[in-house]
Length: 93
Image 1 (tube, rainbow, N blue to C red):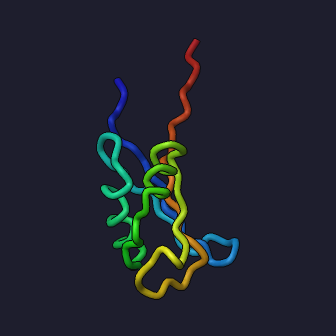
Image 2 (cartoon, rainbow, N blue to C red):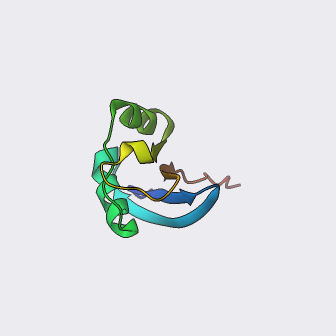
């Protein structure tokens, strides 16, 4: 039996290094707007402006990136990335 829980990885990058990261679990297949506030609260950052570009990338590639220009408030990191983690299927003999 397979679980309907999806794990999503959020990363704040400072230059090229990971400054903060978190993996949160969500039921079903969450839309970007469903999971974004939880990561922003976890990282204590403002919620960025979500453009069609972000929604399209998240739906198509399971990943999107927000830069300082996507935030209305000051953002002291290089970027904020969010990505759906896919489970690897095991081969059973």
